[in-house]
Image 1: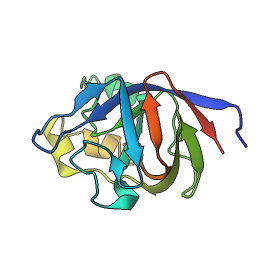
Image 2: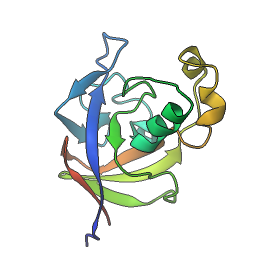
Image 3: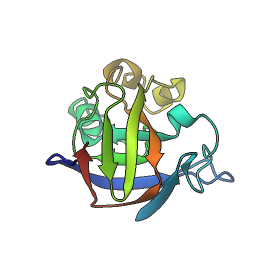
Length: 146
């Protein structure tokens, strides 16, 4: 059963196995092993998809840190803040169903963007989700808690 819409997908990113930089997408396909075509596909199922809030980028901007979307390593950028949702929360995006599997820790490489980012975004970088039901997710899709 769907609840009311909680937010919207603003951007989608996939990093192909042969590339180091994420590429913006209009739509992604996901299955139980992650995002099809992403370098993390078929790696660690609990960490296959990283969701980040636009609020993380806004927080950085308040400190005059400008960085392009995807700088935090996200696959899905949302217009809502999902960080307070408990582990195990399930939600639908497009035709896929995802489950929050763990909170994201900060990677050391983020300090190369700006040395303040690790401390600033300590609890606000993102959340990992695993795929419960395969499907398609597109820019503009709404997130519904299940």
